[in-house]
Length: 181
Image (cartoon, rainbow, N blue to C red; front, side):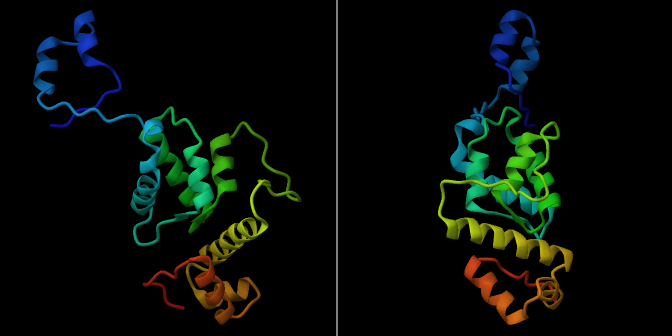
């Protein structure tokens, strides 16, 4: 049996807030797992695993900047909050999740959405990086709309398939092995 809590059970036993006999039954082999905010180096692996659980074989890919944005968050809800956020982003953002999508979800419903004419802008980084992130997101949205069909995605993007493949290769995007085009 594995049991988890965010409370110090030995203190709860001392205060009479937890049954001592149950504590000794559960406390055979205690494992202390620090909160997510104290082990941010695990974030990329956790995000990849959680994204795979949401959509097996079609997991969303999080850009480096998106992972950095996630790492800057304090994670009061710990791994459960991360799992919910990854699921929400995987559904809303399609195959590639970028930093603006992460920031929008972390801000929550109380914030006003960006106006249609002005997408969120993150200054202080190279233009090439920002353009690549936009291009990944744009191609990802087209592929999602085309349900992975490369010819259809190229048509949506108003380009030819060879150019789409070339751009995907340059951006590190992979075509799913089981998608027919």
